[in-house]
Amino acid sequence: MTAKDNSDNPSTNSVAIPGNKVASLTDYNPGPGTYISGNSIFASLSGFIRTEPPIVLSEADEVQLPHIHIEMHELEKKCIPQSGSLVNARVISINPRSCKVSIIAVDNTYLKHTFRGIVRKEDIRAFQKDQVEIDKCYRPGDIIRARVISLGEALHYVLTTAENELGVIFAKGGTGVPLMPYNWEEMQCPKTGNTEYRKVAKVKEIIK
Amino acid sequence: MIREELKEVDLGLLSKSDGSSRLYFRSSLVTVSVQGPAESRQQIDLANEAILSVHFCPRKVQPSSPTENVCVASIKKILESVIARSLFPRAIICIAIHEGVAGSCFLSTIFNACFLALLDAGIAMLHSFVALTIAIPNEISSNKDPIISPNKEQEFEAESVFVFVIEMPTKRELFCHAWGNFSPQHYQQCLQLALGEADKILLFYRGEYSKKLANLKFN
Image (cartoon, rainbow over all chains, first blue to last red):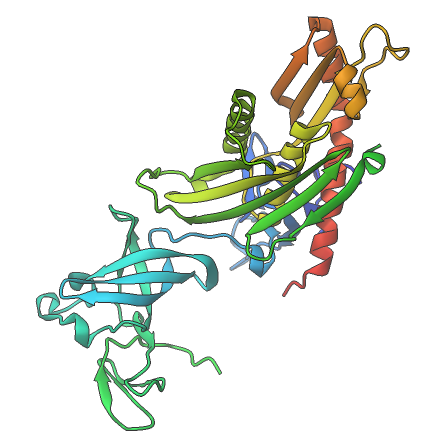
């Protein structure tokens, strides 16, 4: 096995390390974990080389090239929040104008190192932005789903929850019992029946 | 040749680090730990790429020598050119190099251990790189040929010593640190030797990483 054995005919399950030429640009489309230099596709990550057939919607479509990417193990994936990505965050503190969060996952990838974010009062929901009361939307300890707007100015990612699918996905009540969603602005404690105000996310699938 | 000089190589030995490696080559032992990319809590951060922070922890706690500072700065420069820092804006990647035993081929062992730790951490890189030490024996010694990966005695008695860092697979010279008396012809001769040996070291990297992948379960 030499360093150049993956040059033009990549075999699935072969290992690539950064800098290895994995395919030619005329045969494959580059995917995650690869980069283009000249007319060749090189690996930028270390892992297994995987190829995927092209998605052909109809026979009239032009011939598409298959995709090639480097598959990494879940535990090794490195990603940081980027503009537009969906994140899961834990609320750290709230004040009348914003709430500070700690980003714990990006696009379903759990982060080993957390990042700091901020959700401003006007970014919590899309309507009646001036009448938002933060303590009726989020409380410290809640886990929320948000979207990154920008990298922010002072070391905080600026997040928004102004969509139906964004908001609180997990919260604990005063008794320490996890709350169940009641409607889009309330969550109920299954033990005591008390409701607490939250900006609840509209989760499409229930994970069992 | 690598198997004879390599005594120990370990990947992922530190559980709290994102990536780590320990390399015992010739008489040098180096442990490298990589953390990140993580949030940069420093005042200075780059908006378009990650900051690289390299720390060298010597075995004896003492003020660092100028040579040591130059080597650490060189390591940082090379790693900055190799790591795809633009993928991690406003983040920091911390690399800590711990000296175990500073024997022969110490600097090249550090470079190789850094690369293995970055492989283990899964940080995107544009190229691989390998490091080699080549010594030119002095006039008194019977063997006049350059020695690849010299031992401590050979390195001490050598006329000149070269440490090459070669970018792979393009086989371009990234860095050279040399000391002693040598001519341009010596330099070229040693460089050609290093380029020839670089493939073997890269093959070794792939083998070690493949062993690690074989133990991981993929979905």
